[in-house]
Length: 192
Image (cartoon, one colour):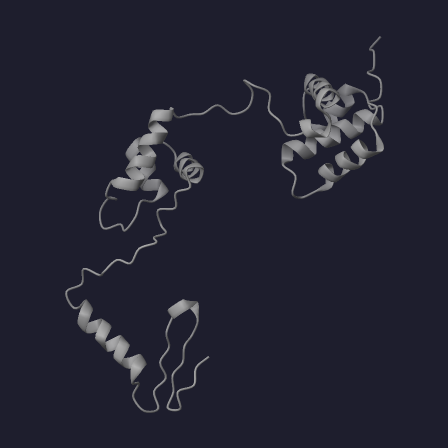
């Protein structure tokens, strides 16, 4: 004969919190699943049946019940030490990716490093490079400095563009992508 676990006792506050987490689109998948498991347990649904409904192992249901009983709502979405995904890179490799992103020249004619180019350089996946950049707060595609063009005709082209804005030909319409808006200059000097 199989013994069923007693129904999980929940306060009104805990029940409301679990229902909010279980139904919120902002909750992680793990937290929502844990909340549903605990709500099933509070209804007295056996651990094996709860596990089947949620697609987890019965021992996982038992562990989540124990975790919640010990830590309450604050326990949700925590990962026990030694559990969860393991780091696939050493700290040294991650530091080298960050250093190369900041100091090494990108390959070819590229203006900045891409995740794919950096991943190829270190023999890792592009998603790993993206994670390292995210954790380091790096966004190599963005720049906070002005770079002068290497085009030998840059100055002449710049004079033409500025001249067009300052003194447009009569009955001319000038479209500019400046500030991500259209600036239209006409014979009467109006703009949008």
